[in-house]
Length: 410
Length: 167
Image (cartoon, rainbow over all chains, first blue to last red; front, side):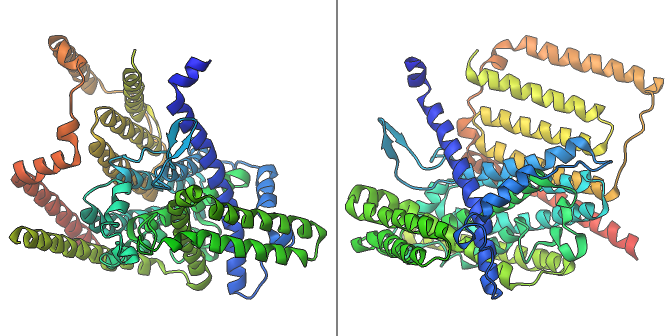
Protein backbone atom coordinates (compact mmCIF):
# COMPACT_ATOMS: atom_id res chain seq x y z
CA UNK A 1 0.00 0.00 0.00
CA UNK A 2 2.75 2.41 0.98
CA UNK A 3 4.81 1.69 -2.10
CA UNK A 4 1.73 2.28 -4.24
CA UNK A 5 1.22 5.65 -2.53
CA UNK A 6 4.84 6.60 -3.06
CA UNK A 7 4.85 5.57 -6.71
CA UNK A 8 1.66 7.43 -7.59
CA UNK A 9 1.83 10.51 -5.36
CA UNK A 10 1.56 12.94 -8.27
CA UNK A 11 -1.52 11.13 -9.54
CA UNK A 12 -3.14 11.07 -6.10
CA UNK A 13 -2.43 14.75 -5.52
CA UNK A 14 -4.04 15.55 -8.86
CA UNK A 15 -7.12 13.47 -8.05
CA UNK A 16 -7.52 15.20 -4.70
CA UNK A 17 -7.03 18.58 -6.37
CA UNK A 18 -9.69 17.75 -8.97
CA UNK A 19 -12.18 16.74 -6.28
CA UNK A 20 -11.44 19.86 -4.27
CA UNK A 21 -11.68 22.20 -7.26
CA UNK A 22 -14.92 20.53 -8.36
CA UNK A 23 -16.40 21.05 -4.90
CA UNK A 24 -15.26 24.68 -4.78
CA UNK A 25 -16.45 25.51 -8.29
CA UNK A 26 -19.87 23.96 -7.75
CA UNK A 27 -20.31 25.76 -4.43
CA UNK A 28 -19.22 29.05 -5.97
CA UNK A 29 -21.64 28.41 -8.82
CA UNK A 30 -24.49 27.89 -6.38
CA UNK A 31 -23.68 31.09 -4.53
CA UNK A 32 -23.20 32.92 -7.79
CA UNK A 33 -26.92 32.38 -8.46
CA UNK A 34 -27.65 33.83 -5.01
CA UNK A 35 -25.29 36.74 -5.68
CA UNK A 36 -26.84 37.40 -9.08
CA UNK A 37 -30.39 37.36 -7.73
CA UNK A 38 -29.45 39.64 -4.85
CA UNK A 39 -27.58 42.17 -6.99
CA UNK A 40 -30.22 42.26 -9.72
CA UNK A 41 -32.89 42.61 -7.03
CA UNK A 42 -31.12 45.56 -5.45
CA UNK A 43 -30.63 47.16 -8.87
CA UNK A 44 -34.40 46.92 -9.28
CA UNK A 45 -35.18 48.07 -5.70
CA UNK A 46 -36.29 44.64 -4.47
CA UNK A 47 -35.00 42.43 -1.68
CA UNK A 48 -34.24 39.31 -3.66
CA UNK A 49 -34.21 35.91 -1.92
CA UNK A 50 -34.42 36.42 1.85
CA UNK A 51 -36.72 33.72 3.23
CA UNK A 52 -34.57 30.58 3.14
CA UNK A 53 -31.88 31.07 5.75
CA UNK A 54 -30.46 34.41 6.90
CA UNK A 55 -30.31 36.85 3.94
CA UNK A 56 -31.54 33.97 1.76
CA UNK A 57 -28.14 32.30 2.06
CA UNK A 58 -29.61 28.80 2.04
CA UNK A 59 -31.58 29.48 -1.17
CA UNK A 60 -28.93 27.81 -3.42
CA UNK A 61 -29.15 24.69 -1.25
CA UNK A 62 -32.94 24.62 -1.58
CA UNK A 63 -32.64 25.14 -5.35
CA UNK A 64 -30.15 22.29 -5.59
CA UNK A 65 -32.44 19.93 -3.69
CA UNK A 66 -35.34 21.00 -5.90
CA UNK A 67 -33.35 20.27 -9.07
CA UNK A 68 -32.39 16.84 -7.77
CA UNK A 69 -35.87 15.70 -6.81
CA UNK A 70 -37.93 17.16 -9.62
CA UNK A 71 -39.47 14.78 -12.13
CA UNK A 72 -37.24 14.35 -15.14
CA UNK A 73 -39.43 13.57 -18.15
CA UNK A 74 -37.93 12.83 -21.55
CA UNK A 75 -40.17 14.33 -24.23
CA UNK A 76 -41.49 12.03 -26.96
CA UNK A 77 -39.66 12.12 -30.28
CA UNK A 78 -36.32 13.37 -29.01
CA UNK A 79 -33.09 12.00 -30.38
CA UNK A 80 -32.19 10.11 -27.19
CA UNK A 81 -28.43 9.92 -27.69
CA UNK A 82 -27.89 13.59 -28.48
CA UNK A 83 -30.53 14.66 -25.95
CA UNK A 84 -28.62 13.03 -23.10
CA UNK A 85 -25.20 13.90 -24.49
CA UNK A 86 -25.83 17.65 -24.78
CA UNK A 87 -26.03 18.64 -21.08
CA UNK A 88 -23.17 16.27 -20.23
CA UNK A 89 -21.01 17.83 -22.93
CA UNK A 90 -21.85 21.38 -21.87
CA UNK A 91 -21.05 20.74 -18.21
CA UNK A 92 -17.95 18.60 -18.79
CA UNK A 93 -16.35 21.13 -21.16
CA UNK A 94 -17.14 24.08 -18.89
CA UNK A 95 -15.56 22.32 -15.90
CA UNK A 96 -12.53 21.22 -17.94
CA UNK A 97 -11.76 24.80 -18.87
CA UNK A 98 -11.53 25.76 -15.17
CA UNK A 99 -8.90 23.03 -14.71
CA UNK A 100 -6.52 24.93 -17.00
CA UNK A 101 -6.49 28.10 -14.89
CA UNK A 102 -3.50 28.63 -12.56
CA UNK A 103 -4.71 30.23 -9.33
CA UNK A 104 -1.46 31.24 -7.72
CA UNK A 105 2.29 31.53 -8.36
CA UNK A 106 3.67 29.73 -5.27
CA UNK A 107 3.32 26.07 -4.31
CA UNK A 108 2.11 24.94 -0.88
CA UNK A 109 4.55 22.54 0.76
CA UNK A 110 2.59 19.65 2.25
CA UNK A 111 4.07 16.29 3.35
CA UNK A 112 7.21 17.00 1.37
CA UNK A 113 5.47 17.76 -1.92
CA UNK A 114 5.16 21.09 -3.72
CA UNK A 115 1.51 21.49 -4.56
CA UNK A 116 0.58 24.18 -7.07
CA UNK A 117 -2.80 25.89 -7.08
CA UNK A 118 -4.36 24.64 -10.28
CA UNK A 119 -4.74 21.27 -11.93
CA UNK A 120 -2.94 21.70 -15.23
CA UNK A 121 0.85 21.93 -14.88
CA UNK A 122 2.08 25.52 -14.68
CA UNK A 123 4.40 25.05 -17.65
CA UNK A 124 1.63 23.95 -20.01
CA UNK A 125 2.88 25.43 -23.29
CA UNK A 126 -0.49 25.70 -24.97
CA UNK A 127 -2.49 27.03 -21.98
CA UNK A 128 -4.55 29.63 -23.79
CA UNK A 129 -4.88 27.53 -26.97
CA UNK A 130 -6.22 24.61 -24.97
CA UNK A 131 -8.79 26.94 -23.44
CA UNK A 132 -9.86 28.11 -26.88
CA UNK A 133 -10.07 24.51 -28.04
CA UNK A 134 -12.50 23.77 -25.21
CA UNK A 135 -14.49 26.92 -25.96
CA UNK A 136 -14.68 25.87 -29.60
CA UNK A 137 -16.11 22.49 -28.59
CA UNK A 138 -18.66 23.90 -26.17
CA UNK A 139 -20.84 25.06 -29.05
CA UNK A 140 -21.94 21.46 -29.49
CA UNK A 141 -23.64 21.29 -26.10
CA UNK A 142 -26.00 24.09 -27.03
CA UNK A 143 -26.42 23.15 -30.69
CA UNK A 144 -27.16 19.49 -29.96
CA UNK A 145 -29.57 20.37 -27.15
CA UNK A 146 -31.52 22.58 -29.53
CA UNK A 147 -31.58 20.05 -32.34
CA UNK A 148 -32.20 16.85 -30.38
CA UNK A 149 -35.23 18.24 -28.52
CA UNK A 150 -37.24 17.87 -31.74
CA UNK A 151 -39.18 21.02 -31.05
CA UNK A 152 -39.44 24.42 -32.73
CA UNK A 153 -38.18 26.86 -30.14
CA UNK A 154 -35.17 24.84 -28.98
CA UNK A 155 -34.13 24.36 -32.62
CA UNK A 156 -34.29 28.11 -33.23
CA UNK A 157 -32.37 28.72 -30.02
CA UNK A 158 -29.73 26.16 -30.98
CA UNK A 159 -29.33 27.64 -34.47
CA UNK A 160 -29.06 31.16 -33.08
CA UNK A 161 -26.46 30.17 -30.57
CA UNK A 162 -24.36 28.21 -33.08
CA UNK A 163 -24.35 31.18 -35.43
CA UNK A 164 -23.54 33.57 -32.59
CA UNK A 165 -20.73 31.45 -31.20
CA UNK A 166 -19.13 30.91 -34.62
CA UNK A 167 -19.25 34.64 -35.30
CA UNK A 168 -17.82 35.76 -31.98
CA UNK A 169 -15.18 33.06 -31.66
CA UNK A 170 -13.17 34.78 -34.40
CA UNK A 171 -13.14 38.12 -32.60
CA UNK A 172 -12.44 36.35 -29.30
CA UNK A 173 -9.37 34.61 -30.68
CA UNK A 174 -8.07 37.62 -32.61
CA UNK A 175 -8.43 39.96 -29.65
CA UNK A 176 -5.94 38.04 -27.47
CA UNK A 177 -3.26 37.87 -30.19
CA UNK A 178 -1.98 41.26 -29.02
CA UNK A 179 -1.49 39.92 -25.49
CA UNK A 180 0.19 36.79 -26.83
CA UNK A 181 2.56 38.90 -28.96
CA UNK A 182 3.54 40.97 -25.93
CA UNK A 183 4.14 37.90 -23.77
CA UNK A 184 5.68 35.80 -26.54
CA UNK A 185 4.01 32.67 -25.18
CA UNK A 186 0.72 30.76 -24.94
CA UNK A 187 1.51 29.86 -21.35
CA UNK A 188 -0.84 31.60 -18.88
CA UNK A 189 1.89 31.88 -16.24
CA UNK A 190 4.27 33.53 -18.69
CA UNK A 191 1.51 35.91 -19.80
CA UNK A 192 1.14 37.04 -16.19
CA UNK A 193 4.89 37.27 -15.65
CA UNK A 194 5.25 39.41 -18.77
CA UNK A 195 3.07 42.00 -17.02
CA UNK A 196 5.49 42.18 -14.09
CA UNK A 197 8.60 43.31 -16.01
CA UNK A 198 8.66 46.52 -13.97
CA UNK A 199 7.76 45.52 -10.39
CA UNK A 200 7.59 49.19 -9.34
CA UNK A 201 4.97 50.07 -11.95
CA UNK A 202 2.30 47.95 -10.30
CA UNK A 203 -1.04 48.49 -12.02
CA UNK A 204 0.60 50.55 -14.79
CA UNK A 205 2.50 47.50 -16.06
CA UNK A 206 -0.63 45.48 -16.81
CA UNK A 207 -1.74 44.63 -20.31
CA UNK A 208 -4.95 46.63 -19.97
CA UNK A 209 -3.20 49.91 -20.90
CA UNK A 210 -1.45 48.92 -24.15
CA UNK A 211 -4.21 46.41 -25.00
CA UNK A 212 -7.31 48.38 -24.10
CA UNK A 213 -8.75 47.81 -27.59
CA UNK A 214 -8.02 44.10 -27.30
CA UNK A 215 -9.67 44.00 -23.90
CA UNK A 216 -12.83 45.65 -25.20
CA UNK A 217 -13.07 43.13 -28.07
CA UNK A 218 -12.24 40.22 -25.79
CA UNK A 219 -14.73 41.06 -23.10
CA UNK A 220 -17.61 41.71 -25.49
CA UNK A 221 -16.87 38.55 -27.48
CA UNK A 222 -16.51 36.52 -24.29
CA UNK A 223 -19.87 37.71 -22.99
CA UNK A 224 -21.36 36.69 -26.32
CA UNK A 225 -19.63 33.30 -26.13
CA UNK A 226 -21.11 32.63 -22.70
CA UNK A 227 -24.60 33.58 -23.96
CA UNK A 228 -25.15 36.21 -21.29
CA UNK A 229 -27.06 39.50 -21.41
CA UNK A 230 -26.97 41.48 -23.66
CA UNK A 231 -26.14 38.57 -25.98
CA UNK A 232 -28.52 35.97 -24.54
CA UNK A 233 -30.52 35.58 -27.75
CA UNK A 234 -30.32 31.76 -27.68
CA UNK A 235 -32.55 31.83 -24.61
CA UNK A 236 -34.53 35.00 -25.27
CA UNK A 237 -37.54 34.12 -23.15
CA UNK A 238 -39.95 36.58 -24.78
CA UNK A 239 -39.38 35.00 -28.21
CA UNK A 240 -38.18 31.44 -27.71
CA UNK A 241 -39.70 30.32 -24.35
CA UNK A 242 -36.35 29.23 -22.88
CA UNK A 243 -34.35 28.67 -26.07
CA UNK A 244 -32.24 25.57 -26.42
CA UNK A 245 -33.08 24.14 -22.98
CA UNK A 246 -36.86 24.47 -23.21
CA UNK A 247 -37.33 20.70 -23.27
CA UNK A 248 -34.93 20.01 -20.43
CA UNK A 249 -36.12 19.64 -16.86
CA UNK A 250 -34.73 18.81 -13.45
CA UNK A 251 -31.03 18.12 -13.20
CA UNK A 252 -30.34 18.17 -16.94
CA UNK A 253 -31.56 21.78 -16.91
CA UNK A 254 -29.39 22.44 -13.86
CA UNK A 255 -26.39 21.08 -15.77
CA UNK A 256 -26.84 23.71 -18.48
CA UNK A 257 -27.08 26.35 -15.81
CA UNK A 258 -23.98 25.17 -13.96
CA UNK A 259 -22.15 25.11 -17.32
CA UNK A 260 -23.19 28.70 -18.03
CA UNK A 261 -22.07 29.96 -14.64
CA UNK A 262 -18.82 28.01 -14.81
CA UNK A 263 -17.97 29.58 -18.15
CA UNK A 264 -18.71 32.97 -16.59
CA UNK A 265 -16.05 32.17 -13.99
CA UNK A 266 -13.61 31.00 -16.67
CA UNK A 267 -14.07 34.18 -18.68
CA UNK A 268 -13.55 36.27 -15.56
CA UNK A 269 -10.35 34.31 -14.86
CA UNK A 270 -9.12 34.88 -18.42
CA UNK A 271 -9.90 38.60 -18.31
CA UNK A 272 -7.95 39.04 -15.09
CA UNK A 273 -5.06 36.84 -16.23
CA UNK A 274 -4.58 38.31 -19.67
CA UNK A 275 -5.38 41.97 -19.17
CA UNK A 276 -5.34 42.67 -15.44
CA UNK A 277 -2.13 41.03 -14.27
CA UNK A 278 -3.60 37.81 -12.90
CA UNK A 279 -2.22 37.31 -9.42
CA UNK A 280 -0.10 40.49 -9.48
CA UNK A 281 -0.81 43.19 -6.96
CA UNK A 282 -1.85 46.59 -8.39
CA UNK A 283 0.56 48.30 -5.98
CA UNK A 284 4.32 48.70 -6.53
CA UNK A 285 6.31 45.79 -5.14
CA UNK A 286 8.01 48.00 -2.52
CA UNK A 287 4.71 48.84 -0.80
CA UNK A 288 4.96 46.11 1.82
CA UNK A 289 2.02 47.44 3.84
CA UNK A 290 -0.28 46.62 0.90
CA UNK A 291 0.17 42.97 1.87
CA UNK A 292 -2.12 43.56 4.85
CA UNK A 293 -4.99 44.56 2.58
CA UNK A 294 -6.65 41.08 2.67
CA UNK A 295 -6.79 41.30 6.47
CA UNK A 296 -7.87 44.93 6.33
CA UNK A 297 -10.87 43.83 4.26
CA UNK A 298 -11.66 40.52 5.98
CA UNK A 299 -11.56 41.66 9.64
CA UNK A 300 -13.95 44.66 9.29
CA UNK A 301 -16.23 42.58 7.07
CA UNK A 302 -16.29 39.77 9.64
CA UNK A 303 -17.00 42.23 12.45
CA UNK A 304 -19.82 43.77 10.40
CA UNK A 305 -21.33 40.31 9.84
CA UNK A 306 -21.21 39.65 13.61
CA UNK A 307 -22.85 43.02 14.35
CA UNK A 308 -25.46 42.41 11.65
CA UNK A 309 -26.08 38.89 12.98
CA UNK A 310 -26.85 39.98 16.55
CA UNK A 311 -29.79 42.12 15.41
CA UNK A 312 -31.09 39.63 12.80
CA UNK A 313 -34.82 38.77 13.03
CA UNK A 314 -34.66 34.97 13.22
CA UNK A 315 -32.96 32.96 15.97
CA UNK A 316 -31.27 30.81 13.33
CA UNK A 317 -29.72 33.90 11.78
CA UNK A 318 -28.67 35.19 15.22
CA UNK A 319 -26.66 31.98 15.68
CA UNK A 320 -25.33 31.43 12.15
CA UNK A 321 -24.33 34.96 11.12
CA UNK A 322 -22.11 35.78 14.14
CA UNK A 323 -20.50 32.37 13.73
CA UNK A 324 -19.73 33.05 10.06
CA UNK A 325 -18.53 36.55 10.96
CA UNK A 326 -16.16 35.16 13.58
CA UNK A 327 -14.77 32.71 11.01
CA UNK A 328 -14.18 35.50 8.47
CA UNK A 329 -12.58 37.85 10.99
CA UNK A 330 -10.53 34.95 12.34
CA UNK A 331 -9.21 34.22 8.85
CA UNK A 332 -8.16 37.85 8.56
CA UNK A 333 -6.43 37.62 11.96
CA UNK A 334 -4.57 34.46 10.86
CA UNK A 335 -3.16 36.35 7.85
CA UNK A 336 -1.86 39.10 10.14
CA UNK A 337 -0.37 36.69 12.70
CA UNK A 338 1.41 34.35 10.27
CA UNK A 339 3.56 36.28 7.75
CA UNK A 340 4.24 33.08 5.77
CA UNK A 341 0.54 32.49 5.20
CA UNK A 342 0.02 36.16 4.39
CA UNK A 343 2.79 36.05 1.78
CA UNK A 344 1.29 32.93 0.23
CA UNK A 345 -2.28 34.20 -0.09
CA UNK A 346 -1.28 37.46 -1.84
CA UNK A 347 -1.41 35.92 -5.32
CA UNK A 348 -4.68 34.00 -4.91
CA UNK A 349 -6.22 37.00 -3.10
CA UNK A 350 -5.62 39.39 -5.99
CA UNK A 351 -6.68 36.87 -8.63
CA UNK A 352 -9.89 36.04 -6.77
CA UNK A 353 -10.68 39.72 -6.16
CA UNK A 354 -10.32 40.45 -9.87
CA UNK A 355 -12.50 37.45 -10.75
CA UNK A 356 -15.10 38.72 -8.28
CA UNK A 357 -15.09 42.17 -9.88
CA UNK A 358 -15.67 40.65 -13.33
CA UNK A 359 -18.49 38.46 -12.04
CA UNK A 360 -20.05 41.56 -10.55
CA UNK A 361 -19.76 43.34 -13.93
CA UNK A 362 -21.50 40.36 -15.54
CA UNK A 363 -24.42 40.65 -13.13
CA UNK A 364 -24.40 44.42 -13.36
CA UNK A 365 -24.76 44.22 -17.15
CA UNK A 366 -27.62 41.78 -16.74
CA UNK A 367 -29.41 44.25 -14.49
CA UNK A 368 -28.77 47.18 -16.82
CA UNK A 369 -28.58 46.38 -20.52
CA UNK A 370 -31.40 45.40 -22.88
CA UNK A 371 -30.96 42.52 -25.31
CA UNK A 372 -29.53 43.01 -28.80
CA UNK A 373 -31.68 42.41 -31.86
CA UNK A 374 -30.42 39.48 -33.91
CA UNK A 375 -29.24 41.44 -36.96
CA UNK A 376 -27.60 44.02 -34.67
CA UNK A 377 -25.77 41.20 -32.93
CA UNK A 378 -24.43 39.81 -36.19
CA UNK A 379 -23.35 43.13 -37.68
CA UNK A 380 -21.79 44.13 -34.35
CA UNK A 381 -19.69 40.98 -34.32
CA UNK A 382 -18.62 40.95 -37.95
CA UNK A 383 -18.48 44.65 -38.81
CA UNK A 384 -17.14 46.14 -35.59
CA UNK A 385 -15.47 43.61 -33.29
CA UNK A 386 -13.58 41.57 -35.88
CA UNK A 387 -12.06 44.56 -37.74
CA UNK A 388 -11.23 46.24 -34.42
CA UNK A 389 -9.41 43.18 -33.13
CA UNK A 390 -7.48 42.82 -36.40
CA UNK A 391 -6.48 46.50 -36.20
CA UNK A 392 -5.33 45.81 -32.64
CA UNK A 393 -3.14 42.93 -33.81
CA UNK A 394 -1.58 45.09 -36.55
CA UNK A 395 -0.90 48.03 -34.24
CA UNK A 396 0.61 45.78 -31.57
CA UNK A 397 2.88 44.00 -34.04
CA UNK A 398 4.14 47.29 -35.47
CA UNK A 399 4.83 48.73 -32.03
CA UNK A 400 6.71 45.58 -30.99
CA UNK A 401 8.67 45.64 -34.25
CA UNK A 402 9.51 49.33 -33.81
CA UNK A 403 10.67 48.67 -30.24
CA UNK A 404 12.88 45.83 -31.43
CA UNK A 405 14.39 48.03 -34.15
CA UNK A 406 14.97 50.80 -31.64
CA UNK A 407 16.68 48.48 -29.18
CA UNK A 408 18.95 47.01 -31.85
CA UNK A 409 19.78 50.51 -33.14
CA UNK A 410 20.92 51.54 -29.66
CA UNK B 1 3.01 -2.17 -22.43
CA UNK B 2 4.01 1.33 -21.47
CA UNK B 3 1.47 4.02 -20.71
CA UNK B 4 1.94 5.99 -23.98
CA UNK B 5 1.42 2.80 -25.97
CA UNK B 6 -1.84 2.07 -24.13
CA UNK B 7 -3.01 5.63 -24.77
CA UNK B 8 -2.01 5.26 -28.42
CA UNK B 9 -4.09 2.10 -28.87
CA UNK B 10 -7.09 3.63 -27.09
CA UNK B 11 -6.95 6.73 -29.30
CA UNK B 12 -6.33 4.73 -32.46
CA UNK B 13 -9.27 2.45 -31.67
CA UNK B 14 -11.43 5.51 -30.99
CA UNK B 15 -10.45 7.03 -34.35
CA UNK B 16 -11.21 3.81 -36.24
CA UNK B 17 -14.52 3.25 -34.42
CA UNK B 18 -15.50 6.86 -35.09
CA UNK B 19 -14.66 6.50 -38.78
CA UNK B 20 -16.64 3.28 -39.14
CA UNK B 21 -19.59 4.74 -37.26
CA UNK B 22 -19.42 7.81 -39.52
CA UNK B 23 -20.28 5.58 -42.48
CA UNK B 24 -22.77 3.31 -40.73
CA UNK B 25 -24.87 5.96 -38.95
CA UNK B 26 -28.21 6.65 -40.60
CA UNK B 27 -28.67 10.20 -39.38
CA UNK B 28 -26.40 12.98 -40.74
CA UNK B 29 -25.99 14.54 -37.28
CA UNK B 30 -24.82 11.25 -35.83
CA UNK B 31 -22.34 10.92 -38.70
CA UNK B 32 -21.08 14.44 -37.99
CA UNK B 33 -20.68 13.58 -34.30
CA UNK B 34 -18.67 10.48 -35.26
CA UNK B 35 -16.42 12.65 -37.40
CA UNK B 36 -15.83 14.93 -34.40
CA UNK B 37 -14.75 11.86 -32.40
CA UNK B 38 -12.23 11.04 -35.15
CA UNK B 39 -10.89 14.61 -35.11
CA UNK B 40 -10.45 14.61 -31.34
CA UNK B 41 -8.78 11.18 -31.36
CA UNK B 42 -6.34 12.49 -33.99
CA UNK B 43 -5.64 15.53 -31.81
CA UNK B 44 -4.88 13.16 -28.96
CA UNK B 45 -2.43 11.28 -31.18
CA UNK B 46 -0.66 14.53 -32.07
CA UNK B 47 -0.45 15.34 -28.38
CA UNK B 48 1.09 11.93 -27.79
CA UNK B 49 3.77 12.77 -30.37
CA UNK B 50 4.60 15.96 -28.47
CA UNK B 51 3.01 18.25 -31.05
CA UNK B 52 0.98 20.35 -28.61
CA UNK B 53 0.37 23.25 -30.96
CA UNK B 54 -0.82 21.03 -33.81
CA UNK B 55 -3.14 19.18 -31.42
CA UNK B 56 -4.72 22.39 -30.16
CA UNK B 57 -5.13 23.74 -33.69
CA UNK B 58 -6.60 20.41 -34.80
CA UNK B 59 -9.34 20.73 -32.17
CA UNK B 60 -9.92 24.46 -32.72
CA UNK B 61 -10.06 24.35 -36.51
CA UNK B 62 -11.35 20.86 -37.36
CA UNK B 63 -13.19 19.87 -34.18
CA UNK B 64 -14.49 23.36 -33.55
CA UNK B 65 -14.89 25.61 -36.59
CA UNK B 66 -15.33 23.19 -39.49
CA UNK B 67 -17.47 20.59 -37.74
CA UNK B 68 -19.65 23.28 -36.14
CA UNK B 69 -20.39 24.49 -39.65
CA UNK B 70 -21.26 20.92 -40.71
CA UNK B 71 -23.60 20.47 -37.76
CA UNK B 72 -25.03 23.95 -38.29
CA UNK B 73 -25.84 23.30 -41.94
CA UNK B 74 -27.37 19.90 -41.17
CA UNK B 75 -29.53 21.50 -38.49
CA UNK B 76 -30.48 24.41 -40.72
CA UNK B 77 -31.53 22.16 -43.60
CA UNK B 78 -33.22 19.87 -41.07
CA UNK B 79 -31.89 16.83 -42.91
CA UNK B 80 -33.69 13.67 -41.85
CA UNK B 81 -32.72 10.02 -41.65
CA UNK B 82 -31.10 8.80 -44.86
CA UNK B 83 -32.53 5.98 -46.87
CA UNK B 84 -30.18 3.06 -47.20
CA UNK B 85 -30.13 1.49 -50.63
CA UNK B 86 -28.39 -1.72 -51.49
CA UNK B 87 -24.98 -1.11 -53.01
CA UNK B 88 -25.07 -1.16 -56.79
CA UNK B 89 -22.95 -3.84 -58.47
CA UNK B 90 -21.24 -1.19 -60.59
CA UNK B 91 -19.88 0.53 -57.47
CA UNK B 92 -19.47 -2.66 -55.43
CA UNK B 93 -16.98 -4.60 -57.56
CA UNK B 94 -14.42 -1.84 -58.22
CA UNK B 95 -14.90 -0.60 -54.64
CA UNK B 96 -14.01 -3.99 -53.20
CA UNK B 97 -11.02 -4.17 -55.50
CA UNK B 98 -9.84 -0.74 -54.36
CA UNK B 99 -10.28 -1.67 -50.69
CA UNK B 100 -8.15 -4.78 -51.15
CA UNK B 101 -5.52 -2.79 -53.04
CA UNK B 102 -5.38 -0.09 -50.37
CA UNK B 103 -5.19 -2.61 -47.54
CA UNK B 104 -2.39 -4.43 -49.37
CA UNK B 105 -0.51 -1.20 -49.95
CA UNK B 106 -0.75 -0.17 -46.29
CA UNK B 107 0.26 -3.65 -45.12
CA UNK B 108 3.23 -3.70 -47.51
CA UNK B 109 4.39 -0.28 -46.31
CA UNK B 110 4.19 -1.31 -42.68
CA UNK B 111 5.94 -4.61 -43.36
CA UNK B 112 8.74 -2.87 -45.26
CA UNK B 113 9.57 -0.34 -42.57
CA UNK B 114 8.93 -2.03 -39.24
CA UNK B 115 11.56 -0.03 -37.43
CA UNK B 116 10.41 3.44 -38.41
CA UNK B 117 6.82 2.64 -37.48
CA UNK B 118 7.71 1.29 -34.07
CA UNK B 119 10.11 4.04 -33.12
CA UNK B 120 8.22 7.09 -31.98
CA UNK B 121 9.35 10.08 -34.07
CA UNK B 122 10.94 12.91 -32.12
CA UNK B 123 8.73 15.75 -33.24
CA UNK B 124 9.34 18.01 -30.23
CA UNK B 125 11.59 20.53 -32.00
CA UNK B 126 9.79 20.75 -35.33
CA UNK B 127 6.31 20.64 -33.83
CA UNK B 128 6.82 23.48 -31.35
CA UNK B 129 5.05 26.73 -32.09
CA UNK B 130 8.36 28.35 -33.01
CA UNK B 131 9.34 25.49 -35.32
CA UNK B 132 6.00 25.54 -37.12
CA UNK B 133 5.98 29.31 -37.58
CA UNK B 134 9.55 29.21 -38.86
CA UNK B 135 8.53 26.56 -41.35
CA UNK B 136 5.36 28.31 -42.53
CA UNK B 137 6.58 31.90 -42.58
CA UNK B 138 10.21 31.33 -43.65
CA UNK B 139 10.76 28.12 -45.56
CA UNK B 140 7.35 27.74 -47.17
CA UNK B 141 6.08 31.30 -47.15
CA UNK B 142 5.15 31.42 -50.87
CA UNK B 143 3.18 28.14 -50.95
CA UNK B 144 1.48 29.27 -47.72
CA UNK B 145 0.48 32.64 -49.16
CA UNK B 146 -0.70 30.96 -52.36
CA UNK B 147 -2.90 28.60 -50.34
CA UNK B 148 -4.47 31.49 -48.46
CA UNK B 149 -5.04 33.26 -51.76
CA UNK B 150 -6.79 30.13 -53.05
CA UNK B 151 -9.05 30.08 -50.00
CA UNK B 152 -9.83 33.76 -50.50
CA UNK B 153 -10.84 33.05 -54.08
CA UNK B 154 -13.13 30.27 -52.86
CA UNK B 155 -14.73 32.60 -50.29
CA UNK B 156 -15.29 35.29 -52.93
CA UNK B 157 -16.75 32.71 -55.29
CA UNK B 158 -19.19 31.49 -52.65
CA UNK B 159 -20.24 35.07 -51.91
CA UNK B 160 -20.84 35.81 -55.59
CA UNK B 161 -22.91 32.63 -56.01
CA UNK B 162 -25.01 33.43 -52.94
CA UNK B 163 -25.57 37.00 -54.13
CA UNK B 164 -26.75 35.89 -57.58
CA UNK B 165 -29.31 33.55 -56.09
CA UNK B 166 -30.81 36.33 -53.99
CA UNK B 167 -31.41 38.76 -56.90
